[in-house]
Length: 375
View 1 (spheres, rainbow, N blue to C red):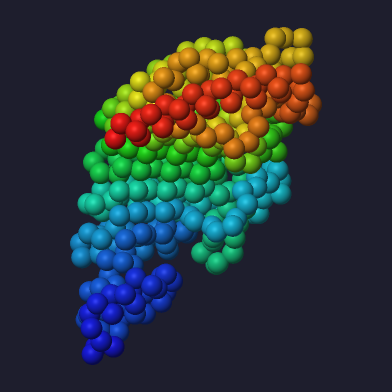
View 2 (view 1 turned 120 degrees about the vertical axis):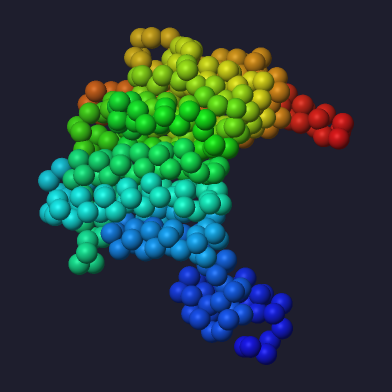
């Protein structure tokens, strides 16, 4: 390979996706070493084990490698399905081993500023870890949530002195706001993009027995700042609903894109709710996505806040919006103490809901066309 043109060697490097293959290619000769190193260390994966955390620390302390790192991904699991096991069905956990894992992860994530050009961090939380004997251990809720908070705390500590621009959190169990007091300590958040997927109310019920349990989204959202441009809030495996969402204090003057998936809207607009949060960003918001969201119905005897009313409100307020994406029917949901969240399909509302959405969508699309014609 040493006689090949450097351009051809570079093309070969770009076509290889397997990390193990890249590392093998890196050891072929000095040219391959020089070309492969930036490619293979651009994205670092930290798996949920002590050894993997220690491997990352070794890269951080090696300036020749650390300089290439742009992304850090914690515990990626392709095609894995998040599942909380009821208490009593988890594996037997070695508390000392769990403590060692938590310490190793905390030390590693606190040291992220060692990656001087780090741009993106993705944290994936799974209720299991790989033991030092190589077996997968299902965790008790206490240890899983403890580790989750510890990792989040360490990353927010790192953000105070790093250039991280994108933070993605997956499979978050929202605890009480007091558990996340460290979020407010990042007074000038560097984030331009924040994405969070939360564990649905139905999943939490497996652990707690409560059908209504869920903490507030606001507890982990970045403090108000002028940097955030994109915000994604998702609950992919079921509806997210909290009776105490507390969004009134959050404002992002540069927010251009907002994506909501399976988020429940309040029955009456309030400064703390999702609907008013959207409207509060009308001056900057350009793109809004709603996927399988729902309007909360407190009881069958109370008035319903219809989607036609919501669409009309958004149309009147979001005068700068140039793109609206709605790929599923936005429905209604009732909380039943025994069964949890029950979807409602009031057919008498469907026609008016659809009509007002189309009017809103047409207005947004026309605005987009006119905006492009002036370019």
